[in-house]
Amino acid sequence: MHNRYSRNRYTNLSVGEFSQGPAPWKNTLTCRYTLLSYDPTQREEDAGKACYIITGSIMAITCHIFLVLAIFNIMLLPTTIVATQYVVGDNSGWTLDFDYQAWASTKAFKVGDALVFNYPKGIHNVFIVNNNSFANCVIPSPSKAYTSGHDVIPLLAPGKEWFICGVDDHCSEFNQKLAINVKSR
Ligand SMILES: [Cu+2]
Image 1 (cartoon, helix red, strand yellow):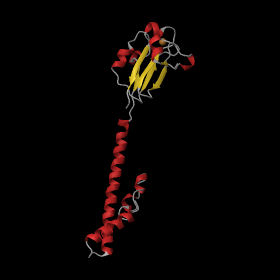
Image 2 (image 1 turned 90 degrees about the vertical axis):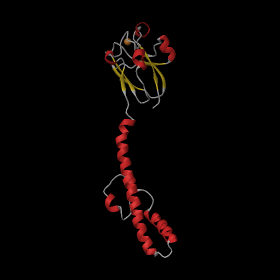
Image 3 (image 1 turned 30 degrees about the vertical axis):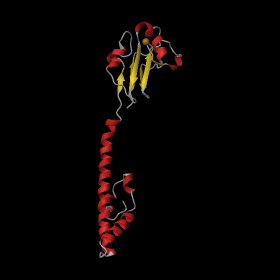
Image 4 (image 1 turned 180 degrees about the horizontal axis):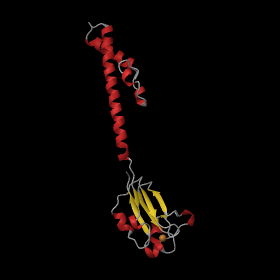
């Protein structure tokens, strides 16, 4: 704020928005001519003083609104972008003979969420596959496997996502596969 009525109160704020906004002298000039055209007997000097006060008040109120909005935004932010990490199979983790479709049916996956596959490293792995590979348990190239035992896979786009274990016949014989539907936020 460059306005002399608000400068003292807002100089200490370091928030960027507060140093911007319309030039106060423009508001004041417009205000002065408006006042003079309503009351031609009013002296230019008095109109100017009145307008400095009016413009100053408007700017001060605007600053307050910006400040309140900024604080409100900061408070709101964590609730609007919060993402959920879903531990696949909960305490059972990523394992054999678990009904992952039943598990998934109770969840509402959204873009920005993530799946966490927990399993003993070396015993299982995770592949992101397409619909056909999911249905027929087609194992992709080993280089595409997640193998850490604690694989956090972000859900980046809305739509269907398919996951299978690529170890031995875990997918085909032990149903170690998961299909989910990701909704946009
Ligand atoms: Cu497995």
